[in-house]
Amino acid sequence: MITNRIFFFITLLSIIIISYSCKQKTDFETELTEFDKGLVFIEKQFNKERLNNFKNARGITEQSIKENEGNVFINEYLNSPKGQKLIDFFISKEVSDKKDIRDIMLTSLFRKLNSDHINLDEQIDARVVPRKQIEVCENKQKIKAQNYYTSFYIGDTITVIYPVNEKFQNAGYPPECPTIDWTFKEGKDLKLKSVIVDKYHWIDSMRQPVRYYFKMRVLEISNWKMPVLGNRVEKNDILELDLNNAIIDSVW
Image (tube, rainbow, N blue to C red):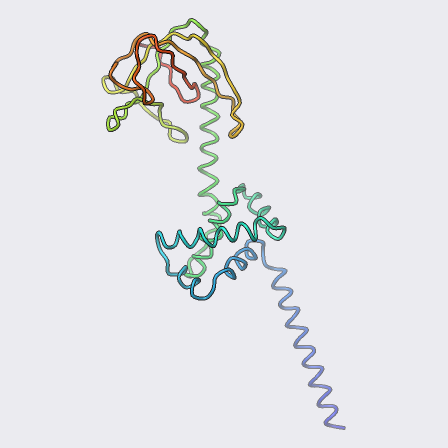
């Protein structure tokens, strides 16, 4: 009789322990954020040896491993229904590119393995802030192009200024967004005087903004030997001017 009671209590205790353990596991899984779940998934893609290599990798080796495991992560997790919540999480943080998500997740795993702070917000900002700066800059460029387009007419004479790259001996458009600050240097940079013979605009389907153009006939140039956008220019040549990138100067 005593033996039966002992067996009963042992069995009951075992059931309680197993139930508690299951509850703890369930509670833990419930508490995991989508970011944590994604991190767990990536870590499981590595075998022990490759995980250790990744932990100790630096430079090219680290990047190579990131690309290999990262592509698996995109294909098997982000492109599947189970990865949608993680994508939604990053979209809420204004990160939508799957390659950006991949890089953030792998960088986070790398830092976790090395007991470093993951600094998730900092990683996100490193991608979001520059993109916003580019968007603001491109919007300013678009407004500038619209002003050029509406201010000048076919038959008007304009002077376009170009920075000269002395190393490659070529005159091109000023720096692109987000770094567009540039100051014309007399005697070094190029001035091109022309007359507008046509004007038009179109929609860039990849990046959305309307782009504006002039076609212009060359009248004068400050250095006839200097190529413009890679091509030698002669008097009366017809050039296309991208107003989103160009700078029109009022003085010859």
